[in-house]
Length: 126
Image: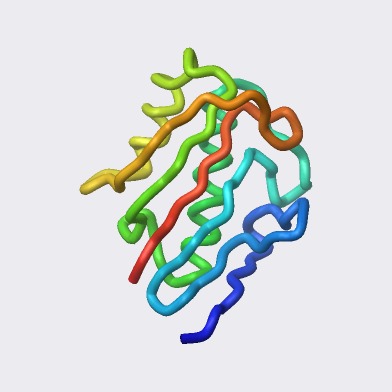
């Protein structure tokens, strides 16, 4: 099997030495996404709900580029700066998984890139 790099202009460009996603066979490993608007490169941090929507839209763009969608997600990881925001993030996150949500863990962290409040990564499969 060959490793294939997935790249779209509809999600933010990587801010370090990594790719938006890597596909290996039928598996897709999507790097953690933060709330950067790919249209202008600016952070979206109006509130945790808006920030979470931007993260999910970035994930969706990468999944779409790979010919997948949220229904293909097997596992996700949510990183939060403040676990007190969990309910708000969970509500937005859940609206993108209408049936059979993936396995998931959510962890509170000491810091995230660019001072964001939430970062989410996913693993998907065809």
